[in-house]
Length: 330
Ligand code: HEM
Image 1 (cartoon, protein in one colour):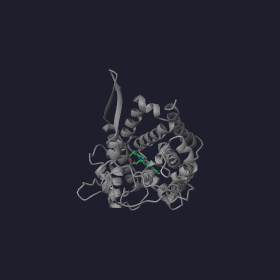
Image 2 (cartoon, protein in one colour; image 1 turned 135 degrees about the vertical axis):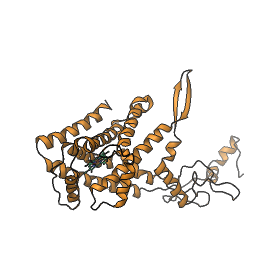
Image 3 (tube, helix red, strand yellow; image 1 turned 135 degrees about the horizontal axis):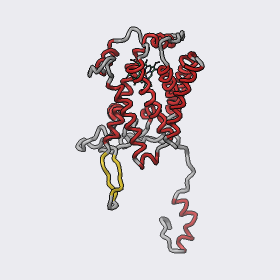
Image 4 (cartoon, helix red, strand yellow; image 1 turned 30 degrees about the horizontal axis):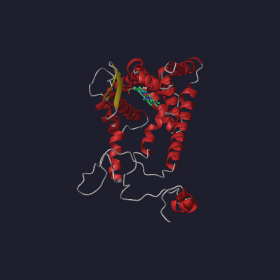
């Protein structure tokens, strides 16, 4: 059920776009109103979450470390595993964000015959996640050509590098194929591995189905139904200038693509997809470990009324002596 419901939700969304546009001719609603609303929810939602995270107090210096802290000059300091200043934190963070370094060291545990517990490396998840995120980013960057006129030469360069295999016409973009393939791999991994399926929720499957739906509709548009990109560009650029023009040559697949993208945008700030912003706010990663060099005082400290041992002994000295408990002061 937790797989079926999110899958059905994406199918129903695609069906809604189909009925809305083909049956009820609601081009303005699906082509303009919903995308605007989604963009608004995305922008306001992401900003308010980031501001809320930014405002959360972090009273303790709690970086996660797994290497030698900066210490005496003759002890080798591990700068990446135990960053001692902001520059080293940036280095560690960049490797985490760009190459998913901690995921690279992820291990898996299995119960084998015997029975015995086996621990092993789990590089496929790392590779799949890397392929997924990098191809997603490249597809997004390539899409900027739909929002820009003239198209910057950098974008054309990225597109031609991505299509360097020169297969067919229109040229097949590598990332356009890798994106749905990697998303499908991540989906099947979740479904097929009992330990992972057990801890997965509908909220884990929904974005995967949504992204696969977006990629499949995009591929259908580019290679099969052949959409009129010029009229779509009139819509996107018109929307950017708040003068939207309803495209004439955009088929139903475009509206399905656009509705799924709008849902993804509106869903983003409330979902696990916010990990893309959250990683930068993780105190365990974004802090330098200078705990020994510098004394950090909890800013929330307030004078606490304490009862010292001396006071305790003053209260109970005679009783303690009577039952033979040693005292500090006679
Ligand atoms: C999360 C955002 C999006 C994703 C992941 C995505 C994904 C894709 C993919 C994988 C393709 C197949 C071809 C390729 O690899 O480029 C595609 C094509 C396409 N997408 Fe998107 N898309 C997104 C947003 C949008 C938006 C906002 C629009 C327009 C308003 C759009 C319009 C199109 C069009 C017109 C094509 C066909 C392009 C062509 O024929 O060359 N997409 N999309």
